[in-house]
Structure formats: structure tokens, C-alpha cells
Amino acid sequence: MAALLLLLLFSAGVLLPSIEAQEAYSKLPDKYRKGVDLALQQLNSHSGVLHHFLFFKSLLKSEIESGFNVQYIYHNFYLKATTCARGTVNPSHQRCQFRNDRPLMDCVVCYKTFAGKIEKDPKPYVHCLHKPKLTETMSTTRLEHCRKMSYTSGAPTLLSSTKNDTDE
Image 1 (cartoon, rainbow, N blue to C red):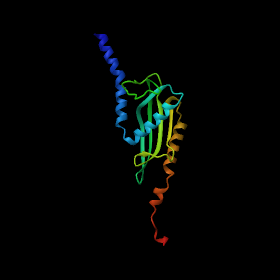
Image 2: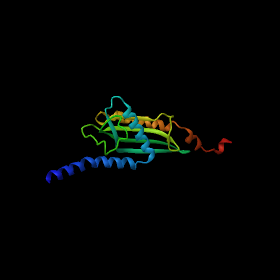
Image 3: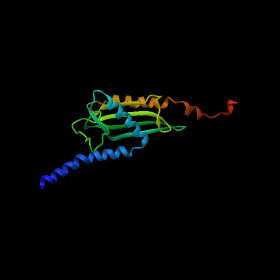
Image 4: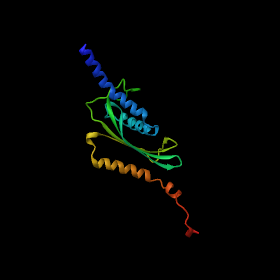
């Protein structure tokens, strides 16, 4: 009886983080989920990656509303390796349990959306790195890259200009 109870508690402990992560992913607004999917697609297609990764949790989310249905999205989040091999079709948190013997993957994505779709120009930025290898300099570089991306569009600035009386 004690062994059965121990097994039940262990099973709940293994499944609970997976279920919480799945809920966190499903609760993400669609505009952020698209970026996570982009990072997962890029990471899982890399030949050096042996395990399948799934979304674990968000660290920082921000968006800049540029007008005319244009947004610039920034999302910093963790991905976590699972027990499934890379290339697993239709992975789920029930089938692919998180591995606790691998470091988290710290990812940053930033991209421009128009009418809810990711634009190809400027090219979406995706940067994922094992958390222990991430330095403060790399974090700053990632953030600066995304800031530059969102400020390259001069249209909102030009359109917000007003005519002065001296212009006539």
C-alpha cells in the first residue's frame, strides 16, 4: 500500500510541471505563441539537438503598438528538453515528459506583425542558448538587437509630425 501511494505521489510530481507548462503555453496570447512556435521550429530542426523541446515559461513579454495594425513583439522565455527524440510528431506534455537532467534553453524572439501575422521584413530574430552559457553581455546584445528592430520603422514618427505655423 505504501509503495502504491509513493508511486502515485511520484507520478503526480512528474506530470504536474508538464501540465502547468502546457497551461502556460495555451494561456499565451496568440501573438506570443507564434514566436514560441518559431523558436521551437528553429531549435527542433537543428541537427545538433537530440531531444524535443517544449515551452516551459515566460520571463518577459512586451509589445510596441506602431499603428496601422503593426506591432513589434519581444518575448523572453524558457524551453525545456523532453524525453522525446527530436522530430517527434505531435508531441504533447503527456507523451513527452520534461527532463530534469538538462539545462533550460533561454530564448528571445522579436518580430514585426501586421494584422496578427509575422512579417518577413525585418527578418524575425530568434536566439536560444542553454541558460548556463548565457552571459550578461549576450542578454544586453539580444535586447539591443530587438530595440533596433522596432525603431527602424520611421512611418509612425513621420505621421505623428504636425504642421507648424512657420511652415507656411
